[in-house]
Length: 581
Image 1: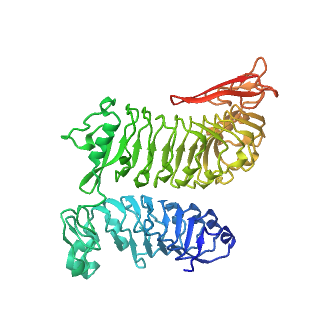
Image 2: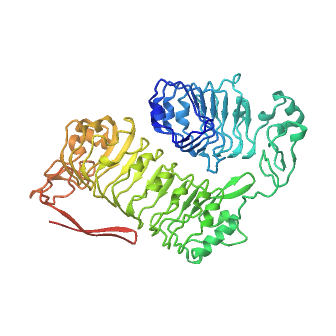
Image 3: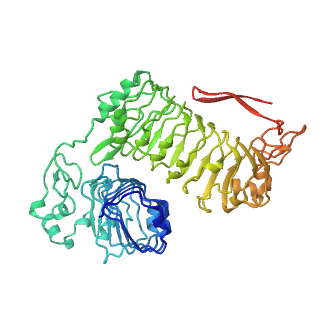
């Protein structure tokens, strides 16, 4: 607590023998950087009440000696890296609580079971946005004699608790959306409060509330409250954040010419629940139904969807693809605290300004639109993104270095654009598993550093077909045992035989067909530039196919120039006009 600010200096992570790192109650900001994984001797990591943002990095998995992880009261968001935490088997204390305190959306997604943490004694996850049910096997292997408590209060957890969860001991769940639990949670053997107040000592029943969501004394006894529809309510009265979902959907219908929709069954019918309106999917929260998804793709929506859609409190998925919309505004998308999937392919949008404020987005599809200019680097601010699809737009320039900062990104699909420059200029995050950069204008050779951040045991699919890449394929790529690597129609002039021994590549085609399973040799061609079950590499009769991986026998020469005369996006289809000469 000495007023330090700025980002954590990268040099700290070079102190590889460090056992304790304390920076509680300062003003450090920015993400917790990947270098944290170097501190393999660390036993204490204490960074409570700073201004750290972004996701909690998977690199924590390397801290297998860590006993205390205390990062509460920051502004982390996204999913908790459950698999990483489960490998940190020395952990005794975890505090990731109150990540919403500074105005952010907090940690979200489903709770990880954390079944390997046998030494854990306390875990604090309160004050976040965790959703779904508590896993039946949550903390099932902790030492019940040593374990003290799990605080999961003030989240968005739903459903009925499994009786197995009661075995771990004290668990705090007030101020969630719990709809039921077995009596295992309120046995008289648990103490005097349970003898006095019964199951209310665990959570106040629906129709009642208490300031702490349960009864442990006369001062905190559960009082009548008809508006309290969940177990464990801590307030009584109309929820100030409650929204009129029906009115919002009605505005969508009116704004987007609902009378012309291909399917508008039951819309605006007062005798039907909104959950029976065509394209509306609901889920139960306690005793109420709430909108969970709008599935209105290819339905002839016309106009501009209202931004009030982002205030639907439990909206997980918004699907508006293949509609002739005038535009889509992202004003207010920061209110969509549970929106994880946004599908806007072929809607004619040309701008995505403001989209970077989406707090929990994991899947973003923007194919077949008119988005132009450089790659929108602000998208990297959506730290929760797992899939980003922007194929068939009019993006140009070099791929930005900010892509590496998208630490949860697993699929990046950017084919059929105008990207240029060299692959040396960009690194991809370690999380990447599917990469499609085909049908662009990338130049130069494939660098030895290509995908070096990705684990060798990853199952990868990479498509860089139909670019202007030259030279050889680097043999360093043989570190990947499972790789589908598509390279047709470039200017590859060398194929090392080491690459031809990778039997697991291209769904086993390299094992079956050798080098031809990767690329057809010069002088030969195939429709997909390699041999597979769908076709062999065939000899060109009149020359041509001067490069490895040709899909036709068109003649190229060293003097061949590719002159682009016109490229535009029209009606969601990317068109190219060029001369070969």
